[in-house]
Image (cartoon, rainbow, N blue to C red; front, side, top):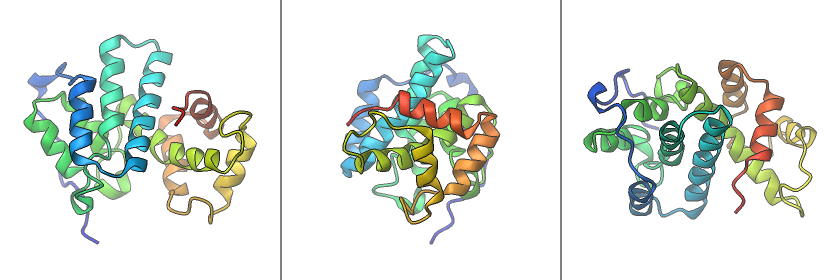
Amino acid sequence: MTSLKLNRNQFGDPKNQGNIMDVGEANSLLSEWVKNEKLVFHMKQVGHLMKSYAEFKGYDKSTQQMWYIAGLLHDADWDQWPDEHCKKIIEELESRNQDPRIMKAIASHGPIHFGVEPESEMDKMLYAFDELSGLIHAYSLMRPQAYEGMDIKGVKKRLKDKSFAAQVSREDIADASQRAGISLEELIQFVIDNQLRS
């Protein structure tokens, strides 16, 4: 497989700070680039969790929007250009003069893969929600009541079962939780409580 390392740490132009696309523009980019409906749902889910967390922290509407867009577009190039994952979407956002913080968060949502360390709170939370929300959603699909009554214990049991949602990196989940400085239990509860229902 082609290396996904981005080999850079600077993204966008600092003078574009505060330029955050609206949801309509982001959704039209998604519909143009992503044909896989499950992937679209995952990205909307992560965007929703990011916005919910920014809201939970009491950040202003502009910051909530920035967190949402970073979550919504983090995998936008995975469907059509897996070998250019992260590179393609970052270049697209740079060409649209977007806030560099959005690109930085996207670039660092898998440090072992892209070679970019998550530094800001937004970077760390995108990394934290990405894999974990995928596993929890997979768990919801096998439960008759979906998210209703789901608890931390049940999620942790699925985390320990390496054959369940095997494509989800347990190492990334543990690493992201540690970097965010939030216990795995707290993260799981937040995802359960704030999940985007399909």
